[in-house]
Image: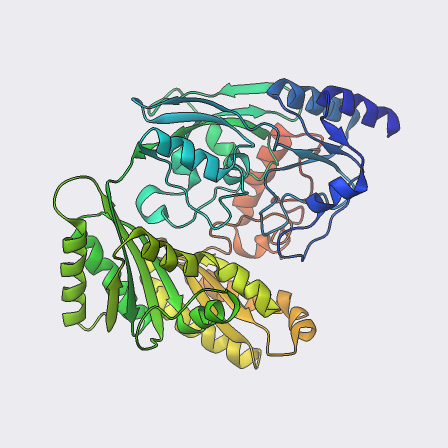
Length: 470
């Protein structure tokens, strides 16, 4: 391997590689600490040409390689599990250009989501993807996992925000699809194959992204609701009242809010009295009639219909940020609380109340002491349906991970849902995927993997199950 490593280091260029265990170590553990990897070589290319040369060598020599962005993934897709070479895209961090008139931006894979948002804002435009990890996650990672976040209701998943891609294939050839076209009907839309593929079909090195007019008005409101069913009715009410200007609609249970208040310094209870459930919403638009007045009127109507028991509309940006801070720090609050078992699932929006009621009852009965922590993007059907360990039982509870996930995911399947709404499959969910996806779909996935990566060197063991069916 030393000869191959030397060739790879030469291909990565000056300052483009490391075999220092201390430098490599932070790349080998995912954020929750559940998955630990190993690698003896970290490559840090700065150009597409260097990535191409690296993959050409890997293809020739049959050397497995794992691409990584900001290492914020939660299913282990970015972690080298068996000593593979690790390829970090962080040095590919240039914004190649912004077309303000055409509302497009071309960025390299290592640009962070926050840098992308800020560059768009400097042109009075909006890149709408919004995640709690936006300061460290990268555009390449967002594309490879088809990231979702808080604004999917209005703007769609990452898949809807990509106009073109530059991708390096397993054999080192570059697939030049970096076009800023809103319409291109010339056959197969190849770029879509690489969005959500978690680096198993090719490595994204740059992307042309879709931008939007920056809202001149943005209204944030926090409401207390008696139940998920009331929240569902509130969603329809607000959509109709605002004429589709609703950009976020986040459901949060009271135990989830209590976790934030307990573990995140500086947070405080936002309303006078506790409520079983809350909805954090955002309405945004351009100049014209006051969106604040519109939102206030809509909420008054919702209160009259007993959909809302209390509500507060943020009076300034600082108050709005304090509301969003509570939502965005839930994952950190869970981590500080101790052991938990997490589910990133989606069901049809209309099924959310019934799913929450059924799945919570089943889990609490089967796993006594499990503490439900439910929150998520209700507007698009995506729930983070988690359970904290009974106090003082972290280790014993962690041993129930697989059994609880099967319990929850089997209920998700009955509701025609998905076991991964926005986190991906990675390593963590690969082996159970045949339980929830048809053999025909899996065979098609395997055929694509073999066609694009016949030597199985790109992120091997991730996303695509080797087994036929569970």
